[in-house]
Length: 311
Image 1: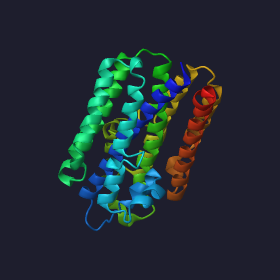
Image 2: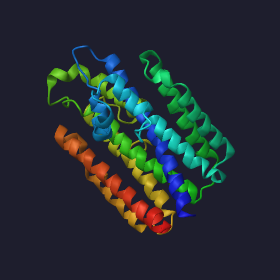
Image 3: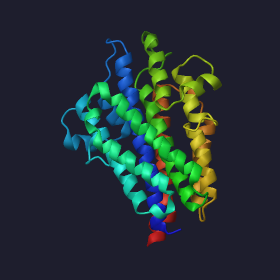
Image 4: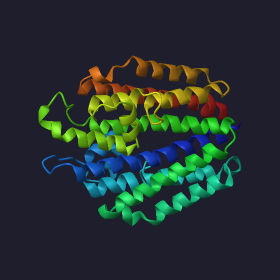
């Protein structure tokens, strides 16, 4: 498989997953604002910090209020990680490699891009935003389902899986970080009434609330949710599950030993961690370390199959 084709397929997958998860991140935050008592004040700047876009945001916006943050994360063409930019990049990468994909998958992605572009006014409207984001999330899932059901299990499929796995694992840690912006339950009892709403919204944002109740069965609380989203081996959006899928896909590709070793380090970080025993600052630091390891894995992919192979 040509390196430039592999790179485009990889980025198509990453950008599509990024669009879906950014929509999920905004959804969970907006839901929190609706569900929490007025005594709890949430700042929209938290989303900018979680996505790591403080510098890019500051170049174009003076205040991190709801209007500006929503525009930046969902619609801003100058933000390469916004939902619209991510979908546009995914579509362009798919367009230049159309012969790889089933026709139905390309049509779905093209229609999703048009849907996102044609309803931008709904993003800024509180009463319409949830429906708009739900449609985008569903459209991303439909494309993923078409790929899973119709694409041959060859190198193209493996690069799609790798792109999706890295982006999903990274965004799961960032969505988890939404809950960790506030004291853990046993560190500040005055926040107790806040926690069920907070962590239920975190789970719902990645469609994990039912699986959590099925496999964990404890009441919804920060430490158990952190353990579930980081270490559960059966839930497709947990970081551990993503790491296992990454290993499987990378072992199918030639010259993947360095990348497999990177995943091995990530898996050891996950298997040896004890989220329930960490305090708030330690959990923050641990999530940062996971994100750094995922970035290292991405760099290894670039050197192995994209940059090095293309020179």
